[in-house]
Length: 144
Image 1 (cartoon, rainbow, N blue to C red):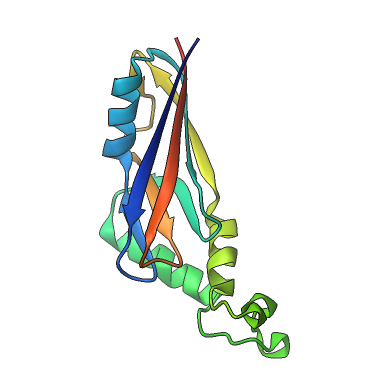
Image 2: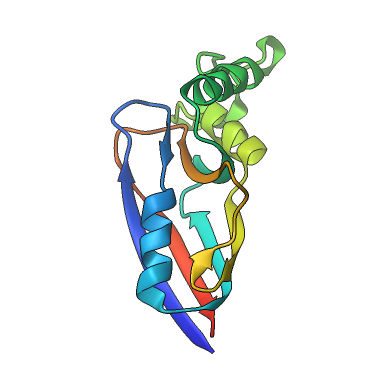
């Protein structure tokens, strides 16, 4: 069985954002020369996520708006007012941890005949919830 590891560096200049990384994952699959197997793609940070959905600008904006309603950034530190105890540590990213939990850490995609075996509209995305610095995404490919 072959194994291939690639680390992708993503930099989102804003605090939040969604980046389509499908092309980079496809390139890693090509480099691996795996014809039949699995591709794991996971965020290596606790305030970002990897997920699959449709490449559509409105949908990405909808996700960010929806997540902000679920876990608002400026909630403060008072739990009685919906604030984050985590922010009492001096951090200001309690919301980002919650957003990551909702969107998920990773995806696993089948590889068939040397290509990602995804649905017609499926794309792989990196979701950033505490950005403005480099973050890593692990692409791990196994198979024959």
